[in-house]
Amino acid sequence: MPVTAVYPGTFDPFTNGHSDLLRRAIRLFPRLILAVAANPQKSPLFTLEERLAIVRQATADLPNLEIDSFDMLTVDYVRSKGAQVIVRGVRAVSDYEFEFAMALMNRKIREDIETVFLMPNQSYTYLSSRLVKEVALLGGNVDDLVPPLAARLLKERATHTRPSGRRHT
Image 1 (cartoon, rainbow, N blue to C red):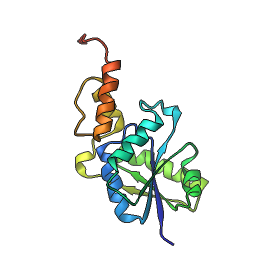
Image 2 (image 1 turned 45 degrees about the vertical axis):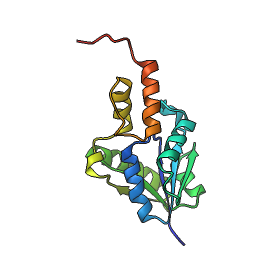
Image 3 (image 1 turned 180 degrees about the vertical axis):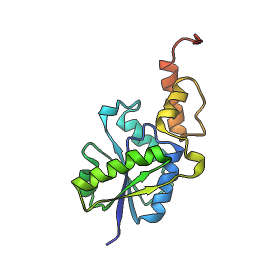
């Protein structure tokens, strides 16, 4: 039976680092599902529909990829899809500590589901959705950090949310 893996995340927004990790994972697993978490507790900047659209545009060249969304425990979603593996990215030791604790909790809930950690290309080790949003919303250019649709939507949000041109000293 071929192994199915799920790459879950809020992807608010999906970054070039996420894309790099996804492309690494797709080489390892015959069936890969990128699953966008609804996760309203995180108060995402983008709607679920916008996040799905960004992912679809950024991954249009990957015919073997399934894209889905979910609003339940990740391990329950993984099980519902008949998958055996959760793919997670680790950029630094701080990521590992968080991801390790989450993997152990997932294993406690569903012992039959494994978590696999992948490292992105070193050029993406500093990149996070949180930092991208912060830079974009303060007027910085993130065109080389996110797919084109994400860059456009971030620019639109920045135009509507940026405070007046007052400088803080």
